[in-house]
Amino acid sequence: EEPLRLPRAGGMEFGNWALTEDSSEAYRATYVLLVSAILLPVILFARRGCMTVALVLLLASIVHQVSRLHVDTSYWGHIAAGVGLCRASHYILHGDGGALVIRVQHASLGLIATLAMFSYVVFRLPLHTFYNKVHATIWALASLLFASMAAHPITARACNGALPRVAAARQLHDPAVLAALGTLLYTHLHDMQPIGMLFHQVFGVQLGAISVMMLASSAVHAALPRESPLCTLVRGLHAFWWLFAGVWAVHMAAFMYVFKGKRGVHHLWLGEDTDAMHAHEVGGWYLAVDAWLSAAVLVLPLLCCPAKSAELSSVAVADDDGDPLLERKSSVVHM
Image (cartoon, rainbow, N blue to C red; front, side):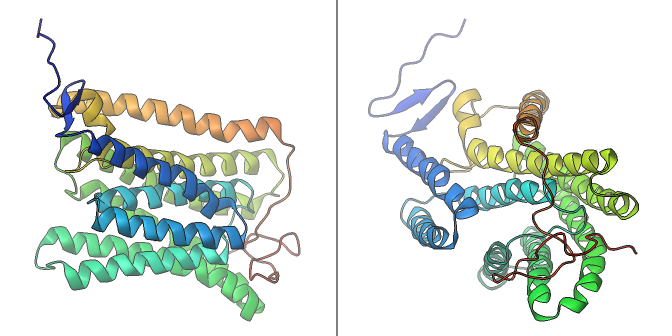
């Protein structure tokens, strides 16, 4: 048996990986995770005033973390994507089965953030490498998706008569964008660690599944009433894939990128010598746990809360905030 190894002088060692040369790295990672856990739920679920305060604090913290503490930007990229996907699952579950409709402030924030990342890749990184070309394409596609989502409530307020045509276009456009993103995430050599490749390939498959579920949901809801058992099941499955992908992205951020040098909880727990075969096994275990967790989180409100009508409609008039009100007219576009 391998003898137990004592921590180096002035350092910390857990499992198979020396975490840092001193204990400050553990405190830094704890700080990053606490900021994520406290501020992100406020931004997603609080009212506009609290959301604005939390957003300002989060942006200031991210600038401090990246510039002063050298937190890997991959952490915040995956966290933002994962939390957004989780929030979208709520809108899907309580929506009308058509195009995904989110709050205008969330869509605008996503558009600004993805355009900023696209600009950073284009103007600050060498585009002659194919690696950066793919990254620029990923951020461009994400910007298109948020632009589509932002156009929806804006159209509902400015030109409500055009909303059915916008909704019909989105029912084809958004699945295509998600399928393209899934393809790039599956094929792109983003993280050459075997476990890192597996994380991104699974994420790509999940986005592809969301694309398929979007089309299926639109078709089923166009043919049947929203309250029918089949529509309810399809919305649940559709919401599950959004939540599953979001949980997986947050998992990836914490387990792969919360420490310096593209390392995370995975390396802390299992070490850095995870070969391809072991990565396949470990990744399968991670996937099974996340699948069950996502289903449990989704099923709990269905068991505890009574069924209710849709919250945001893909074709309806807008309220004072520019968000489409529901139940004013048929919610799914018949194409």
